[in-house]
Length: 215
Image 1 (cartoon, helix red, strand yellow):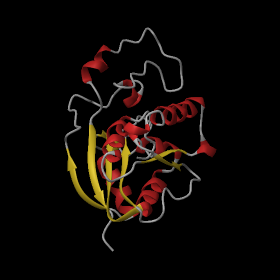
Image 2 (cartoon, helix red, strand yellow; image 1 turned 135 degrees about the vertical axis):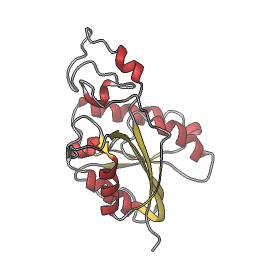
Image 3 (tube, one colour; image 1 turned 120 degrees about the horizontal axis):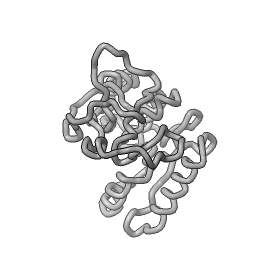
Image 4 (cartoon, helix red, strand yellow; image 1 turned 90 degrees about the horizontal axis):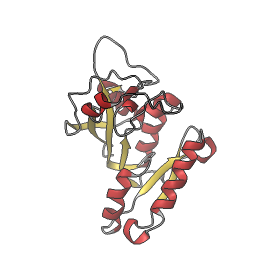
């Protein structure tokens, strides 16, 4: 799970794998490239929380991902990699291609890459290379995966939201669960009325499955 944030998916997969036959590997922010205090605090809280109950979560393994990080894991050693609402942050940092390449290298032949991502509409506007508003066009994600060597397997509309018009003052982060009331990095604005964005709900999202070809 690359850049698992606060650990929503860790809460699900940690116990599942602990009581099964697998193990969970969290690729946290690269220690040498922690951008700000908020990132450092998020990483510290993640380690503290999931280290507090090893009976429930198991002994979670850690690795790092960032601009200068080495391999995520020994080549061909993992069965699945998750990119969950993080590609926009990698695009902003210019490391999206590295993320796909590193995931491909870590996966076993036949291994799966799962992607959930805020989905931009496809129109006459080209994809913003920095994904400034947090949304990414689905063909662009598929292109990144294909260039890394992945084969597209399937998509699902399970995380689609037709009410999301993708036009929000603080990008996708205006919507739940972030609920920004001011630009990212600025103090909250108590005068901001977020009722419209509550009515929209969470973002419209693509859900994609890719496979590393058998060799």
